[in-house]
Image 1 (spheres, helix red, strand yellow):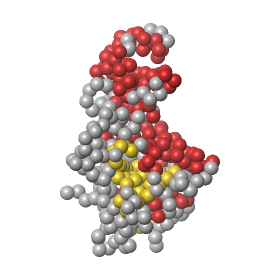
Image 2 (tube, rainbow, N blue to C red):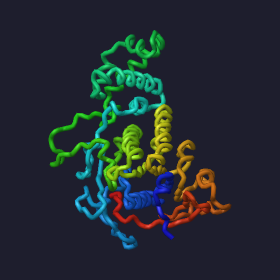
Image 3 (spheres, rainbow, N blue to C red):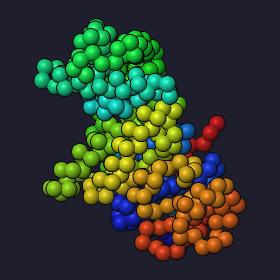
Image 4 (cartoon, rainbow, N blue to C red):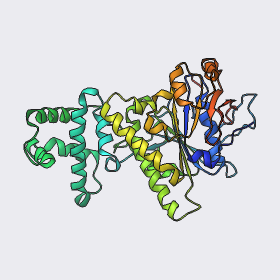
Length: 387
C-alpha cells in the first residue's frame, strides 16, 4: 500500500534517518517527487552529490513510472528542475551560482561560521556584537554595505573605540585586546569567510561558459531546486541555510495573508543536518540550532514543510525533533536512539532495525497509530552515482 505524502503530512514536517546505504537519498528524491507533484516548490540540499541528474529518468528495471524533471523548464509539459551551487568552480555546468549579502545574514551565525573552533567562542561573540553594531550604523548611511566594508571597519577602528561602542566603558581589558588581535588576523585568513558571501565574481567565462549569479528569491521557483553544498562550503551550511530559510518565511508570509497562485507552498529538504547539530563550535551549534528550531515551528502556519535528514536520529536535538511529526528510520544499530525516535514501536519490533536492507524503513506516520515497516519505490528520476 503506497504512503501518501499529503499536504497535511508535509506541513507537519518529517525526520528521515538512516546510515550509509540505507536508501535515504532515494527516499528524499521520492519525497521531492511527491511534493512537486502536489504543486509545491521544493528545495533539496545535496552534499555527496546524490541529486545532480534529476533531469534524467531512472533506468533501473524495477522503477515504476520513471519520470525525469525538465532541465530549467525546457519542456513545458514536465515539472522543471534547476541546479544551484555555492561554488564558482562547480563541475555541473547547468548549476547557477548563488551568492549572499553579508547585510542579510544573522551576525551571530556569521560569527560562528568564521570563528568555528571550540577555543574561539569569545572571538565569535565579540565579532557578532561588532557586526550587529556596524549594521545598525550603516542602515541609514550605507545600506548596501558588504563584508569587505565590515572587515575594513574592524581593521581600521581602534580597540578603545570598539570597546566603548560595544560596552560603554573600559570593560574587557587585556582579554579584549587579545581577542581583537586574533579577530583582525583571522578575518583576513584564506577560507575563514565563506566564498559565497559578497564574492568578487570573475567576468570571464568559466570552462567556456559564463555562470549566472542568482539571488535567494529565485530558488523558490516552481519545481525541484537542488542546491549543491560541496565539501568546501560545508562549514558555511548553517549560514547559507539561515539566509534561505528567512527568505522562505518572507516569501510565504505575504501569501498567507493574501493568497496568490504565483506563490507556491514550499518543501525544504535539509540533508546532512548533523553538520549543524554537531558543529565543532558550541557557539555555532547553539545559535544555528535555535534558528532552525524557530523556522520549523513557524513553518506549518506558513505552509512550509521541512524534512530533516540525518544518519542517526539521535543527532537531532529534542527541541527540533518534537516538531517533526512523521519519522522514517532506516538501518540503525543504536537501540536506545531508536526507542526514543519511534515510541509507537511494539516490543521486539525494533530488533530488526540492524537487519533492514536498503530501501526498508520503519515509518511512524503522522495521524497513524501503528508503526509501519515499508519498502520504498525506486526514485523516478536518476540519482547521481559515485564514480
